[in-house]
Image 1 (spheres, rainbow, N blue to C red):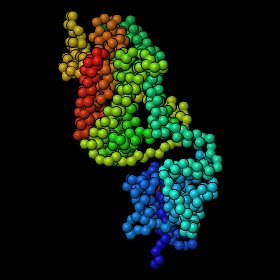
Image 2: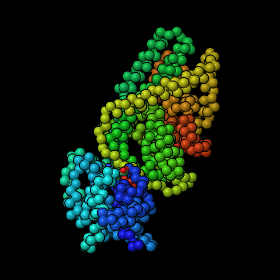
Image 3: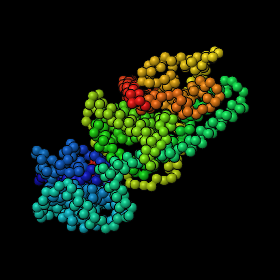
Image 4: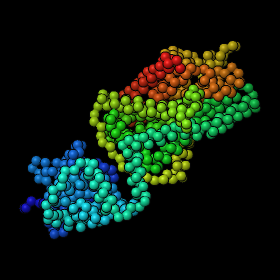
Length: 613
Ligand SMILES: Nc1nc2c(ncn2[C@@H]2O[C@H](COP(=O)(O)OP(=O)(O)OP(=O)(O)O)[C@@H](O)[C@H]2O)c(=O)[nH]1
Ligand SMILES: [Mg+2]
């Protein structure tokens, strides 16, 4: 039997090569809507209209003939006939995604320039049409010098025409010699060809392309991302103030009401010192939580977040993480628990473990009340520049500090315990969309509800328990209640350990209940101050005022540094145990986070003292 003629499908990742291969040969290669699905070559048989059969190869997607990843190397070696005993395919079928024409034309030029018999399958024309993009195949064929066949692989449209074109492709006269081009030249040419072949383009499509050029620009992109984050953290402080003040006023009024109408005694104290002072001190941060999530949800819904992930990919790769870690880490800004669960989508086990271990360093929303109360009390509310508040700047700084620490830890882990190579970035950039107000409102409501439910359940329970431990045994004459109480005694013991890093007894007292939920650090401070207050006036003083009076600035800064690192949340440890099937990694996590928290709080304290703050 005579040898079969051969042809191969080449093109960018996610162009629909495998879908075409399946449609043409009846095979069932895996196809999926993200780049990098096919990593090996696969062959099948295609029957031409003449009845002749040819051997068709499906290749991994590639961005260029000089590319270095192992799957792209397969493609290059097959196309160039570098595999021993395997001559180069006689016909090259370049598959283009019509809705991404300009991008896909960059590699196509390289393949066509090889001067071999070539046919272009202009695939996904249905998606292009949906976007209002009309492409003239004849104009494209003229520009490229090879036949162009519009196809829709998943609807089997254009398959016969493609087969016919493959059949006659060999008859194409030998390609005139093309000069070797650089990547930049190919990009410019791709732009010009795409512009010439696109007959109509809706204003929307053009705007989306423009937005991507801006948001993904090598240096403008990161700059815009940073500016955006900057605005977010400014807003968290400046927009929230009136609402937070109103809430605070309301809670104060309730407290006054209770004092005026309830008989003096422990039940009244439980209500005012435990519930209203303690839980209330956390609830006042609801406006800030809502504002933060408003921005996060809007960035997600608009499609911008995926661009941010794309920009961050380079940074992540630099510390040995893949872009796949971005989404789990991003979720950890809400809470590390869903973040750690989201790491299940990371296929590489060491990638995944590294991501789990650094997830608690992303500033979860439970830390916002802690940061906000300290910042409001100790950082002067003044503008560094017009419109740039110092408080928002410090808050942004704390978030950035957490991220930088996470990246450094990842770097260290990747060189030691989770040694290995990072896998590539896999993420589709979704279309831009105006966030729908209904969806936004629903998302915000869910976040607010989660926060309030925590305040009503876990924070409430822990605060009441602490209040009880603070009130018994009762103090004798002239003795301070906190000093006399069980909680006070425990705190005195713990204070010895945390004194070297500048923490006082009040802080020691708040650290243990805060293991249940970080916000409890705030409610426990408020409760212990209320219990320890000498008179009603002192009791009614706002938490911030009390902190300002009792703490030095170095202590406050050390407290902030502690919360950047401290694994102050039992649920995170529990979920880590479940996701890593054992106690080894949660214990590693606990130790390294406590260690870093201790060291950095100490450095901050002594640094601030040395600076005379
Ligand atoms: N609407 C539409 N979707 C398509 C078409 N062709 C392929 N797809 C879809 O596009 C996605 C990518 O298709 P694949 O065949 O896996 O792409 P590929 O070029 O093999 O990708 P790699 O193997 O990663 O290089 C899949 O979700 C397909 O279902 C088309 O003509 N129209
Ligand atoms: Mg494929």
